[in-house]
Image (cartoon, each protein chain N blue to C red):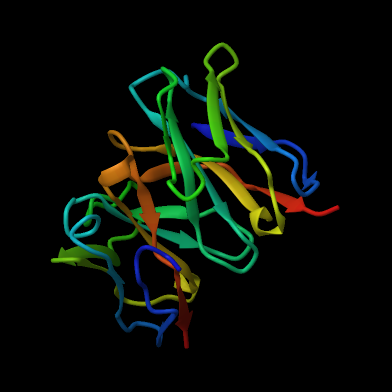
Length: 121
Length: 111
């Protein structure tokens, strides 16, 4: 059974960079041409797609966040990562990593449990 | 403001059916058969309920069904049960700029 687990600091100061890693277990991040994504959810609000990465390193970002987002993949560790720069309180959210189940940027079939990141001084 | 429009709330009594709409544009919902629906209980990660407009993942009850007409997709829950009370989100592939868009979510209450 595929499992995803987010990890990283739960508290980030304003103007600094948020960094999270998603560790995939129960399957290879580079198998079967799957794409891997990050989604966030501010407290009490809806879901927002942040971006998606392919095991080869190709990236696709939400246009509204593109200038601040960097995603990377480490196939040797079966992990992919998110960096979000110049954070503000508006970036406070639960951050989820997930796998796209079909081809390309389609549905998300496996999700991590999510990790709350608070932006505060 | 979310890219896809959902009603903030919906409700029904046990055993009844309820439909939740998800309205987009010809650039997302109307342009591709890549609409998906997620169920989210409080404090939990979203769970995939419907993908590619009307397909159900293994393990999802057939009480859940999806459809699409033009720029509007719908999730129908038949034979409502107490455990169906949750937030539901639609999502669509949005082609240009290689985007994924979500709806604002609908809180389903089982009366």
